[in-house]
Length: 287
Ligand code: NAP
Image (cartoon, rainbow, N blue to C red):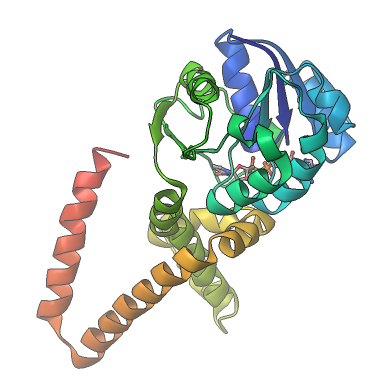
């Protein structure tokens, strides 16, 4: 059980983790630290945290678990402030959607205490942001990937694993490089496609008529384009190498579809769609 949990960034993910751990009785006290007083007050009013702190050193004092749940682009500055005030007994983890860049920042900021930093990423979320959107069951039966480094302390890793299991999640481990390469395809690429499609339609001469005559296909494909643009800008930049590879591959494959449509190659199109349909039908059982 966690005695004093400090969550830095009480938004969708930080708030959902706090709710899940409180609901399951796995934490005695939850302290929230954040950027705006309004969001922190809301978190207290919603009963997501016990109390809020506007000073990071005060927030982490005597914490035995510290969770960084801010956007990826803000992790480095938070880690730099945290380094000098990190309590001896504390384990630190994060929920960032990219792991390589966060690990680099943590290694630089935490020095010898880097061993007690356990990088993590819950593969769960929604297109909503902020503590009001947080849910106690967001992580139930969802995967959380930990990407420990060779020098990550085994006990720290076990404590972070136990925290996520108490929140209802199933924990797996990957290397950071594998995580960033796989997530570039499974998560970051789909967000780029959704933003690109909506932006293309928004700039279309017949935008209004297109939307009025759209149905579930457009809505299903573009739900995630409602996600926070700052968060996704940060993810793109932090995982740019792997994301560029995925985008180029998709670009080439889309080019092949353009050619087949131009040529009227129905067999090629039907073979491609059939392969994808069968693969997607099997996926329904897993996701
Ligand atoms: P969110 O709802 O926008 O919450 C982010 C929180 O961080 C907000 O409370 C925000 O405060 C706070 N914050 C931002 N900059 C800060 C700073 N410099 N110092 C202190 N607090 C700061 O975002 P989220 O969706 O929970 O995402 C948080 C992290 O989870 C990101 O690293 C993201 O990559 C990762 N993640 C997201 C998802 C998803 O589906 N959304 C899934 C898995 C992982 P304000 O309220 O003042 O803005």
